[in-house]
Image (cartoon, rainbow, N blue to C red; front, top):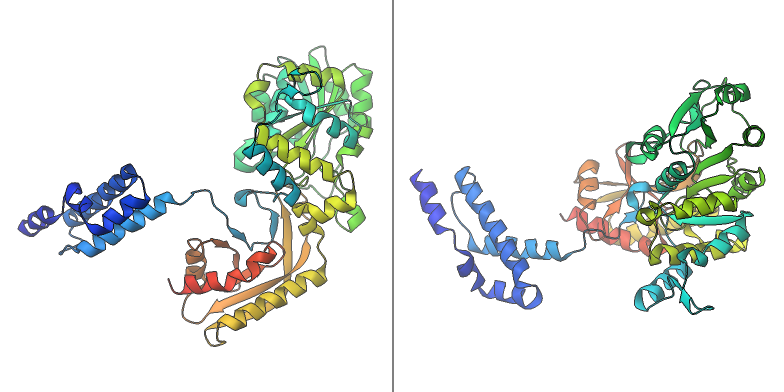
Length: 466
């Protein structure tokens, strides 16, 4: 006990630490409040270690080093760039879709200067923020009207709250999807004030199931595209055109939540068929909603398209203000949408599409380049490097069964476990995120950006050095 008391008395005060030259240098570069807070945290850690009997001597140099490290860590951005070597193109946990270069340039311009967010330059008076993208969305999809909110869950909520509050919404039981973060369509519907009416079974729903559920309190016949899973085998789903016809026969609204909407027909490029937004609009739906940051390759947004009379009602909902998008989302979405005027240009410039459609030959060349970079930095006896074929995924809750053939570079250090390497790589600058299979750390070149290929060996070397 006496030893602990003596150690506690030896712990310097904050004022004593502040007089040290090392801390003086920190105060030149960093705010005093930050430095003092870091000092208090490290000194408090020392006290706790003494009381637990974890240390028996105090090392001032070590304390100063810990304070310096704490300050530097706090000054770093918590939201940071990472290298995505997972092979998941639209990785929900890693920021989803990358933005095109022209989009980034527009974002920088909007951030640096004042802009006409809600100012009508033609009339010289207040305007609508929707005016920047509504005509473009209508041009690309054939919709009568359009609006955008912060994400697709918000789009579903706002649509149902506006058009079906206190009314029934009929939907197939097999379409009551759950998306990332445990958000479920039934929960969104319940909080919107709409009354959920499930019809059919998990695997089979018929047109008569919808028709039998319609009564005087019904407002919407809803279809939710199961973009993040598929039911196969003995299944039955009502075609959208038939659902639209039934809805209009009873003067009801036909609404489809596409989830991950897209403007490009993936089947033309050898991938699984996904309904395009244009196809859904051509089927005659009254309202459709989808995400902007998945297959579309833009910023996080919930896009709502449809008949003008319904979109205008949704725009006037007071809750719209709580869900509206800011100038950065508007700028990024407008620039992304403009690329879709030329499908070839969109595929070339929008990273999400480019990474999904990239050829096997280019992937092979990337893998070979990465292996060459590794050979320049490591001896064979220190790090084994292997190229092998593998499978990438689209991600983002889209095309769940689609396999994208790819090439991975597998590495295995001689003097460190693969699991320990993976852990250390999460703390490098920048962090490198990959996956472990068959006791190798795999780097899928599909999602590694070209400028990161040369950087990766250095990142690995830093991780191995601890």
